[in-house]
Image (cartoon, rainbow, N blue to C red):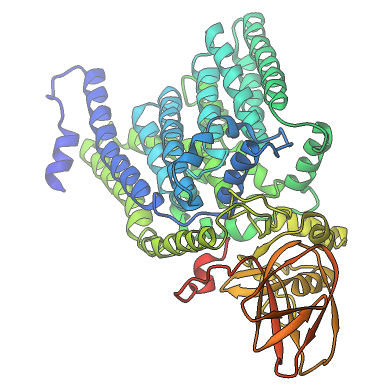
Length: 591
């Protein structure tokens, strides 16, 4: 420690030019922080390339397969289908496809970190910028959700690039044009990129307030706005033209629905439990954020910094945090998307502390640099990282479950689950995440009952609690999320257990409870395998155990012989049953 301190503190001769000496010490400090950044990135990617697949990542993948089948009709937030169609050729297993997709997202993630550094270097210098990147990498939700296979990853990268060009290259018309294109593409990836548009608007007001040539600045900003709208409209039109028409909702209706679903002014702090998670795990980082904002405001009011415009821009980076008050979907992945500019406040307070100490005691400044850098890294990666190392077991269970599903169903068939986990198969139901289920419960309409009649799903994958048909009554997920009673009963009457969380279309009969001929209805037509102790008459024709019966949709009858106590009609021709026990539910249940 003493040797490192001496190297940082005495990096130049005593008689060297003070400005040059300061630059060299700053470069050495940034290099020291950079070593921890490299270590953090290595640990992050080592974990994330084997981290369990989140429900939204399965859903994101399903858009690609839906597009390739010609079924995708929603043009909003589906731009990625044009860039990731190659994933279908990578593997038949959806987990493998997502993991390969994450490798691409890793480059966007690195880009986000890079543009965060460039923006920080412009606003506060290289040391503060490097520390801001380290803080972002150390955030628990960045460790767990950064580089996720979601639209957030490219959108965050493009948005940070645009913010850097807009703020740091404010005198360049070309940079404003590029920034407009970048923000338009980011919004086409995900509507929530509008958060960065608010940040840019505020930065524009600060620029005008400090401008010596407001007319020129207004022209450049108007150019940005014009390019943004032209690119967004043109890009949207081209993308929409590639999709089939006639079944999708209107664009304005979908945007309005998305806004009301994502923005909940009457439901403040809807993601409070996730905020508490990061506050408790990233306490030091949040203290730095608050201190950075306070110091920047004090510096701005007290005119303590020579460039007040840059100081105002630093204080402005607190703005994205206000979205927590009204944005409904403040799940962990949102923090990985929203926090990059916020982390500049950490860099600011760090640079101010070091710059305040260094003129009087270089060695103490070096000690503070080493202590804070190593402390931030240790808090996140030494204390919070080890529990994540157990997660590859869940990833393997997800992968194995999907391998078995593809063995059971060799060709794509319609099915029901929560997040479209079997993304290469057509999903018959709506996305049953928290937002979807809350809207479903609020509407109070048994849409799944109608889905069974319209879509005729072949199997159900119980990867959320409220789809576990083995329960006597519909289970509830955290937050009280559950199915309507009519839908629950319809699902239980439609599917029969097959293996673990997999239920298939079929019928079960207990002749010892009800003797004689029994009527039954078939919704999903096809071949059914008969399982019984003896023989039965189906629609008057004799069949024995193991026979495959072709059943059309509609009414049928079954009548047992005296030796038959039970019978099961299972969809398919002797469907494959995995020889191994299914994994525990905790390993395949989606978040």
